Image (cartoon, rainbow, N blue to C red; front, side):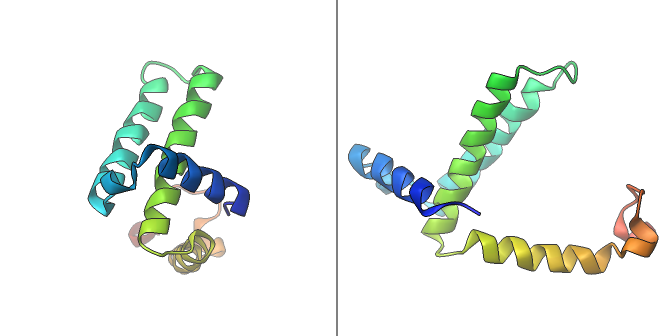
Length: 106
């Protein structure tokens, strides 16, 4: 999911600033939530969000997700595929296709 190049660039950025000391799982999880709220703010009053700002906020979210996964020694590709398998079972194509209904109401 994330390239080695991206992970190395993030690690170098954090190392240069000595910020790893602040990157507890709790702080990183909070940061993900804060940045997600900032992304949502881009769409607060309409769907016509500023693309540059959306890109920046999305990059912030992904950055904190990568940092948290690294801190917890989790492989993002692996956990996303595991979750996709669980979600696939909850939302079978034959009952979920074209519907936004929650799995327990299908």
